[in-house]
Length: 406
Image (cartoon, rainbow, N blue to C red):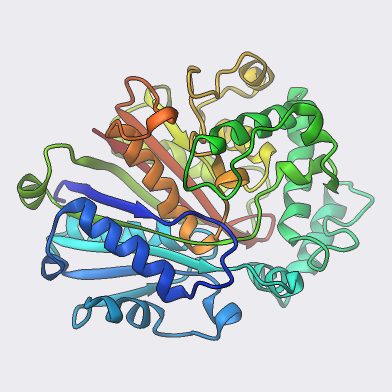
């Protein structure tokens, strides 16, 4: 397999943009990435386009990539449309990496986009609810809760109508971590405060406001222990990057970021103890030739604040017994020993699901190139992204892990 470099990145601001179309969002991100890479459009051999819900939200199905790229003069090349729930664009990135690594293409474009916001919030919630098995998912979760000795269903009243069903799932997931490691609602509020502070420093973030612990705790209950400011907002956005071979990278940049490992997996109905990320992590680190302690900065899929510390535990980066200490002592801060979600994470940067994976990659590449501005992690040489999507049984249906090196 050949070495693969990221040589160009760009993204829109994530947010609520009712006046922008999917073409508008893709145009801004793609042209920005091409300009950042400094390559001619004609050098792009293939395009991988990640999106989750455009069909449900806009009516555009089947040829989303062709429809959004052709107006930019990117046509006549293979265009691969990739749908994998919230991991759509990180999965597209994996396929683009494989295309270059295998020698099939020398240069590819990867883009993720989403139009998820609608004035009718129920429409957005219905789109998100399609990220589970719509035939048997609710029954499975009810039976699963009973097997675990839970007296109440995982999906509570109002799930899918007053809030995303995923918030109920995260509330369920975090309970054993609280019991086992002593994590509290205040710890999760502290993570949210940190991420809002990081989002304040990020011009691409949907929320750019510093908040206090008290404000997070008083922001309105979603599903205990989650409050509104602990949860990712609904929004729109796009992110793009250019990948190429080592020989081509040398023509365009003196500061490439190398893909050290790219790993995509799926959850399992039978997996009740180990999360898919926990299963995938050792192999991902092995492929990169490093241990988890060598990661300098990471973006994890924090659709809720508790997800941040849970993901670090599952990846083997934070020992579970040290989780409270890591939060209390500021280890997850930009200046801490394990800077996490320097972008503000999904909680504040936003979570337009089809764009989220490449949005995470945008932050890590910027960090490793020293271009993160006031969010810059000093001496960052190795970074990682963790992006999950959907629910299969009681676990993520899709998971994408990527490791990058300078």
